[in-house]
Amino acid sequence: MLEKMEILHVEKVIEEFETMTKDTENVQRETLKKILEENGSAEYLQNLGLNGRTDPQSFKACVPVVTHQVLDPYIQRIVDGASSPILTGKPITTISLSSGTTQGRPKFVPFNDELMETTLQIFRTSYAFRNREFPVKNGKALQFIYSSKQSRTKGGLFAGTATTNVFRNSQFKKAMKAMQSQCCSPDEVIFGPDFRQSLYCHLLCGLIFREEIQLVSSTFAHSIVHAFRTLEQVWEELCVDIREGILTSRITFPSVRSAMAKLLKPNPELADLIRRKISGLSNWYGLIPELFPNVKYIYGIMTGSMEHYLKKLRHYAGDVPLISADYGSSEGWIGANINPNVPTESTTYAVLPNIGYFEFIPLKENVEEQVHDRGDANILSMEPKPVSLTEVKIGEEYEVIVTSFAGLYRYRLGDVVKVMGFHNSTPELKFICRRNLMLTVNIDKNTEKDLQQAVEEAAKLIAEEKQEVIDFSSHVDMWTDPGHYVIFWEISGEVSDEVLKECCNCLDRSFVDAGYVSSRKVNAIGPLELRILRRGTFQKVLDHYLGLGAAVSQFKTPRCVGPTNYKVLQILCDNVVKTYFSTAF
Ligand code: AMP
Image (cartoon, rainbow, N blue to C red; front, top):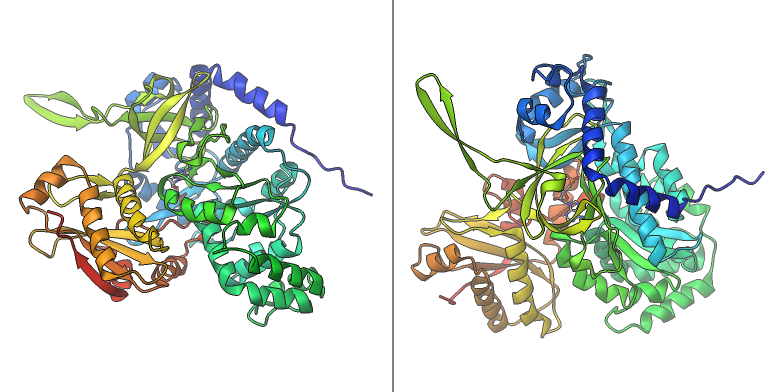
């Protein structure tokens, strides 16, 4: 019997979204009420004296704004198997490993069914808007997704990266089917134990089903670029496999081999076609549409630290549109991209008011002087005063605070966003940067965004030599006196010393922050140093993070390496081939 395929009712999803965002304030109030009712019995909330109250005023008066560090001891008890309700009413059975570390181990955050449901709601919402502009037929998706192992914690909970927890959830596959975006690779490849082997097989599956591929995607744009860089290296081996119908012996896992054997048949015509197509390309431009003629768009998170990879992705994509995926984190989702037509760099995310309770710390005047009268001692404290979702102002920047269905209350996410407008009464946010990623020696402050812009500017000089910056990072070297910025570059090929010296000067000049410029002029900050890395260094950095249990699907190159991140700093420093100091000031 034919299984009836449930296709998502796109117009209905949009209608629900429109209704909800016309009533954002009430929906937020109701969402907070629901979160607090469901979790009122949790020890954390009990101790804060809410006494059953669920309104925003009482919530803000009783519950403090916290960082992960404050909640960590509670989460740790859950991880260790405590059976009483600690952060949520219902027991937490799964833990996500978020990016970043807490005291040298991966940061843990709770994951539950409610979080899974909000994830799917975000996916459905952006899909509905996307599909209006770029409809996909019932084809396949070439998805570079990888699921790391789910392990068990000491207390018996499942632990994996958030993407792993999502991909392994039975609802995920159903949702992807309903969105006509099913992965062309078998589960054994997605869940394969070795990411390199999985990547090779994803590429092979994509080529086998090339006519059916409707979209190419990954969680973050970095993985898509990484995949096609790999294809440049392994395409001949892929062609041999397709010609002979036998998988290369490099793929060693029996489950992956047997799943691939079911798809591979000797197909010399296809192998010849791919060879012809690739040989006809100039410097790999337009590789994606050449190999996948029916692809409608390329999809993945492309903003924030992913912007660096857009140039390369556009090169591979030719005229195929790039669409940024949604905005969220292991801690919870925030907004959906409902304007897929705008240029990727201008993507905004409309907040879904029913997936969490959101507050925002204004960055312009982020401190409120509060005089606490404690007996005879007046204590002056600096407290950021957050505003609610409907109180944010267009053009202003904020740090995001999340209250989720998974046990996080007034949790500082650490991201900076800018309000670009409103959709009905919900704000549309542009992702700006991570708040704590900062290059600073003394009075200077340069964010991840400033760094990216400086690198972009300087990279134009090597683009004239037909070379590119594959990836980059930075570090503040305080061992020298005065301290100075160090920028690490891995570049695609040979560039003369002269040009690289100019790049170094250009980087130094591109940090226009007044504190930096004035400090440089009086040598309170030393000359910027550009260190060129051996090819493959960032692959080593990626391997290092994978070794710590990170997933490729969630990988973000650390843009600023702190002095305590010894291992990554060591990998970078051990692979320096050339060093330049700026003479710009
Ligand atoms: P993780 O902790 O690995 O789940 O990563 C979550 C972080 O990735 C967020 O806090 C953001 O800093 C970043 N991120 C997630 N979605 C986006 C997006 N659409 N644009 C830019 N950065 C994002």
